[in-house]
Length: 235
Image 1 (cartoon, helix red, strand yellow):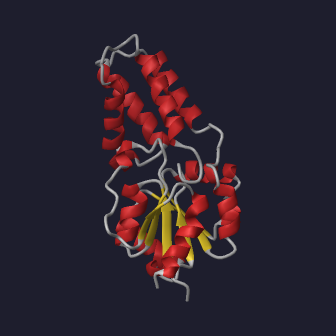
Image 2: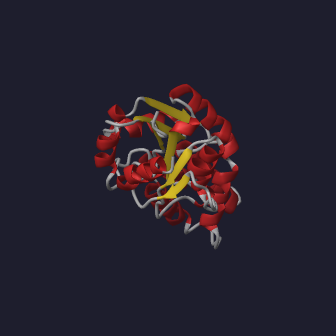
Image 3: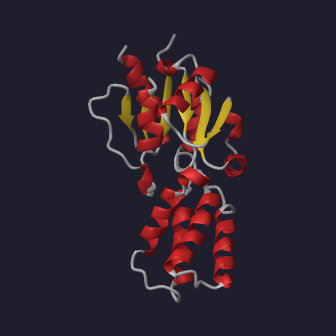
């Protein structure tokens, strides 16, 4: 059996643009509150609230919307007008309606890789929103399985690999988050390909693994086959 038979792929900011729309919404949020607070760390407080609320709301646009409302109330001592809250909620609705833009090399890479490997999608966030983005991307037919999870951890990856692959040792996980895509997948026994994105959320940052033979950093998904070939050559 080849060393790698299955490729697991992250979705947001690995297959398509995502974080850039959250950044635009953050700016819209700041603009809406400009006349009601002089807090110099408004964006940082929003990011902190979003991270703090992950345990309650999970990842995705809905949790971000609630965190924007919470932050607006906090920084204005609950004096923010209802009209501004309405505008914040409207901005959140726009967040889930931005067009899906696949990243460079994604379509070509999946077209080529599907002939040699089983492809599975492993993404976290709101089920409705992730299903919508996948459908809008036009990429759904490439995947033999889709797993939308509340968070990505070593036990979650172990369950997914047991369910959909010949084993972690025959699987490679590719994604833009060291914290969510790379480190827990490596700990679960898989190979991992880190595909950096310029706008990865600070919550997802972590140190790259050192001296790990099952890890590789690539510039884009068009280089994934070459990375897999290098892993196969190490047998």
